[in-house]
Length: 404
Image (tube, rainbow, N blue to C red; front, top):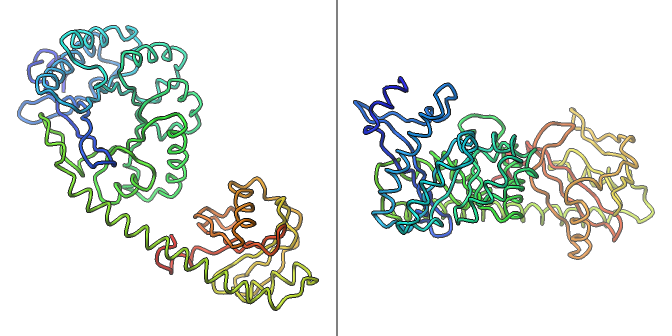
């Protein structure tokens, strides 16, 4: 569509509102403003504000018009929710936020509480020009306006820079789940983002949720807020805050039931390996060489493992690797001796836990570098300073309900 046609027919530019739901109470806590052009059909105008070939004066003018319409409706209907205003980061910097701040100040003078507003900016441009933004964004936040950073899930290499602007909300897109692009790798990234958000006091918002699977992913990865057509369509008016409550409660019940089954499956596996190891260790003498120990354990635990080795509490490997070859035979690989594994995440935490609890620990899912497959590792204390590690292959985990 021609930008000039849009500018000549501004009365046909209409604000729509995309609901945002809280996991805590399953109620709508806010709406994101979505600009549309209504003629014979409804057309999204997101592209208009992103197109640098359109003069910035046009885009700022239309920005103000659509925001005025949205703010009038928001103010006049006395909403108690939040209003998310998505703003082109480059346009904001062009006039140092003057256009936006003048508009919002005019509504504040009429009685609008600026604490109800959330300024939403795309991460890429802000991160690249962080020094130019940090003072402006800090000032905007002093007015009570919250700051949301969109596409935060793509900024893991820039989290330190992102922390400089202290965003209140981090938005993550779930659309990657539409393909088979190794969602477990995204899960690791989003777990890191979830921890980062907690450290800086930000809330994690997952957007683009269209399916049960995507909501489940957001729920499992620390999403506090959810947004997408799975809950409600974008509409030109505000809807009842509890319109999705029963649906989400049902979904949460499914999630919780499934997670409980997973936890039971993992506890059952842990107990099973623990019992087998106790039997195996009784057959061994304390004087036995570590390589004899791992071969005995490997054969006793043959159906559930492909690699067994022993480390001390400092992370140094005391044994070879006992590894199952393609013929199902156990072979020793001596090059594993004296390698150090203390650099692995949670290594020392697990060592301390095993010494205190006097029992083994089943790891989370991770990708084994050598086999390039998802595995779990079971670690068990043979003594206060010697620990056995049993790697469990994907094939076994896949066959057991609740272990993936």
